[in-house]
Image 1 (cartoon, rainbow, N blue to C red):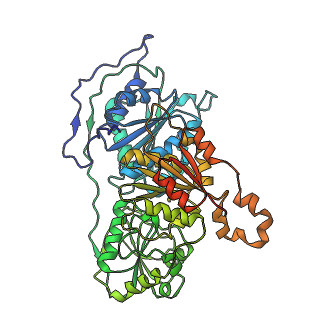
Image 2: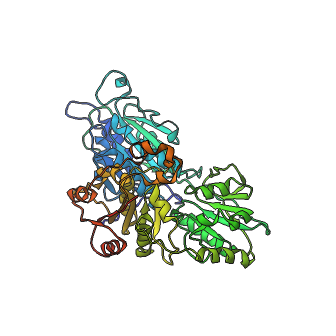
Length: 541
């Protein structure tokens, strides 16, 4: 796989100036100034000097100045082309999520822009750095009925951190570059410690194609804001660590804290903390019992979302300490008494952890073929050199009960909004960003939501991705909720479970995947050990 040359880092000590001399604005054959071509070149060359993991470009007309400029700089900016803007945006989300750098999604005007909304919403709530470049028609065309034209400025509302506007009919290359830099650092959260999506809306006036010289640019060195000092917690309260969805770095911080203090670690599967001697696999079941009732202090890392016992703990009487690697923090129970960048706790009496470990050891493996066996088999098969991407709904909750692995994979999940869309596309971005074998585990409805992302274009890299579908023919999660009560049985299958009866093996094969179906855990293990790229594990809800 080609690894792109990255641009400069955030903390570099000097500005970088292109050695190319500035040239006068070029004219096309009709004598029109080629400002749009120049603007596209400035945007691309500026991004090439920033910490950008890659650009996903949608095929279109109005963004042609950008597409051509990105293609010209493909050795400096890893370029990925998408025909489906929704899927492309999720791929960019995966690139940024896995790398910790800025990913760019660039699309043409009109309805293409609206297709970015689901990924942007996830990026906002998950704190993922995404620069959303939306090509636009000139302002005077808005509201006239001009083709592929709508009011794009602010179309994403509060789902973006900010909106930066550029026009080929206004400004200079220096001003354009400065605006791009500002938008990029806003998205990265360099100064705010609050990364997320930023819209860069760019009005392009014809001509849209042509050749532009490399611009002379000055790229500023922007230093990040710093973390605060470590807060030492007092001894005394019986403490547990709750680790929700988190980056690898934050997950490892949660694990180190728990092991240094010797306290139980209640880690969700996408926390990247579910390993080591303190991790309690069946914490969800234990929270409702005697041990859960004894908890006096909870130290929270990441974004916990998966279970009601956990939510009850975080909204109960125990003291809640939140450790956040961002300027904002998660406190759904409104109970936080302390929010800090880093905390420390001296070693606690070993009897507390030992009681949790002994209770955890009393749970056995599931005997029924279903989502839990699928999750267990996959968790046992994967190693620390691989990625696992978990879809939302039932299957990630099955993975929340899997035994602790001594060498778990690096785990990702879209828990900002916990939606089921875009899972395969996100996994492709993660695989491209890391170069590591990446397995996606998702339900059948989540797979159907993202079927278009199974297309692997012959001119594009997709990444080393394998898909495992836990197929129970519908929305199994609803069986665990109030909607499954007997009084709603007449409506349950149609309006909640929504069985589709699709043969996902044949669908995946039609897209060119080596696809197989399995009906028990032994068949699944065999398929995982083989060369199957798309595995459908069928079982009853």
